[in-house]
Image (cartoon, rainbow, N blue to C red; front, side, top):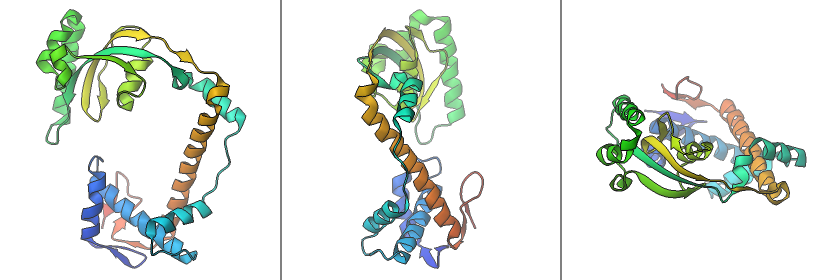
Length: 248
């Protein structure tokens, strides 16, 4: 392929190197190309603004620090966030959970794996007392030897999707749908819930302000990068193609 950004070629060697950082993405090649295009337009803009580009990462950071600004979150914004997401500020909450994992592997057919997981979920719903037996038979997790038991979990002990699923349940029982994470499809049973304590707003105000500022800064940065890409002369790839990049 031949991709040029403002007259500079993005080489196959660069793509091969960059793609290693995006192996878990749904479209690794797209993400690698996107990253390289953005790196080049940022470097070109940094040079135009007078920054020393002999150290590209430092130049890019300096450019973004200069060009991207956003206001700090107000106390009212922070309190509104606190009221809207109280579960994020609870400490001491514990969940005892068990699961049956249908693991995603590089060559697996996702549709067939999902269908199999749904078949087993139907079995578990019909015979909940046999959960441990089904875990030993079907689960791809080492916990299968323990009937699927994961023991007690605190917030943050598991990946985000699993974490949300188990802590959104307020009482023991089987979650009636599959939960998908990067590891695969999970059938989850909540064995015990221990309520936590909601921290007072004054205690978490600084971390909320920091999180809201970071989110606002990220949005502003993405918008700025979009403007730079829109102004650049990019040949060989359509950055606006629906469904991913279109290599031309």
